Each structure stands twice: as structure tokens, then as C-alpha cells.
Image 1 (cartoon, one colour):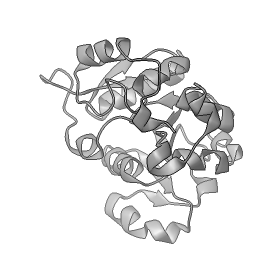
Image 2 (cartoon, rainbow, N blue to C red):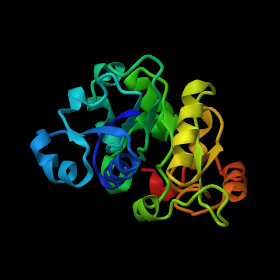
Image 3 (cartoon, rainbow, N blue to C red):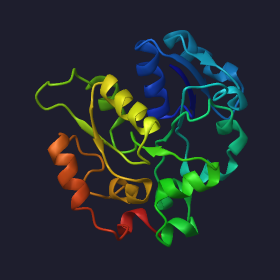
Image 4 (spheres, rainbow, N blue to C red):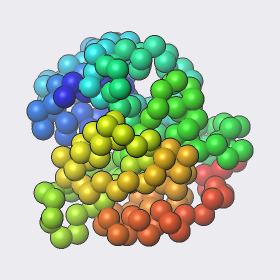
Length: 219
């Protein structure tokens, strides 16, 4: 697939490495000149581009930026992907640690619903709760005992099927976590967040998630 990745922090950079190694045609961008990604491009074979070019004609787009920067991302960038291309967002809201207060999130809007509203497209929430080194190193073939599972929230349909298949290709069991409106179940501070659970464990953790945002992830 042609995959555009916007944001090269720990998760975005890791996905660049993993997806390029799997043979996908990856274009990667940050908020600066593509030359700042020359080392990553040389290491992985990905193509460093300006942010405005990252999603052009892409089969799949990954947004992996600080939550506070979401409103700064021009929706036209994501809209340049192929019609129906799934958009994955890996963001988390860290109000005390990084993002400051975002009123809509404090008032109960799920983080990914808020992202979708800003970008003007449906999104899929995945990769937000796994430690980046485990994403890099702990993917294993399907059927391996103890295979880590990752929840995927978003609308049903071919785009979700593509995202679920991508998670499996990366070496993790995909777990359908319901519609985007239920994505709060995998936000920071929930039972599934940061845990290397198997598929049954992920389903149980999602079901047990409290609706109230934990104090350490609120202001």
C-alpha cells in the first residue's frame, strides 16, 4: 500500500520503520523541512516529504502528532488521500504533561471523535496505547501464544477491515473495539491502555473501562 505518515515521534517513527520493512511505500512528514527526516529516510527507505504531500493519493494515512496540534493540521492534507482511504490516528490527550486543557475533551467528547471533527473525515483509533518499543519488537505471527492484541475503534466497513488487516500484518491480534464513539475505552488511564494483553484480555479491559476520565489525564 501507499501509506502517508504525518508525525514522526516514537509511534510515528516506529510505524515508519515497521511498515517500510514490510514493503509498503511510505511517505513520512513532520512539521518541518523534509531534510530533517533525511536520516530516517536513509535508514528505512521511506520518502521524506512536506506535510502537505504526505497523504496525496495514499491508500492509508496515519496521523501521529501531539493532540494539541490537531487543529493546526489542514484537513485538505488528509483529504488528498484516495477516496475511502482509512485514516488512523494514534494521538493521546495529555493535558498535564503536554497538551494543556482542551475543553471538548474535558467535557466528555472522546479524543478520536474530536480529531475526526477537526479533520473532517472518519478516523480509526489504534496504536495509541502500546509502548513504542513493543510495537517495534514484539510483533509475532498469528497463532503465536501470548500474541499482543490491539483495539481498533471506528466505523465498520472496508476501511476498518483494512486497518484490522494492517494490525495483523504488523504482528498483533486486532480486536474490534466498536465505533469511534466508544474509543474512550482505550484512552489514557483505561484498563487496556499501556497493557500487553491478549485478545480476550483486551475485550475484558474494554468492557471494564470507566467512563470518567482519570484525574492524572485531566485538568
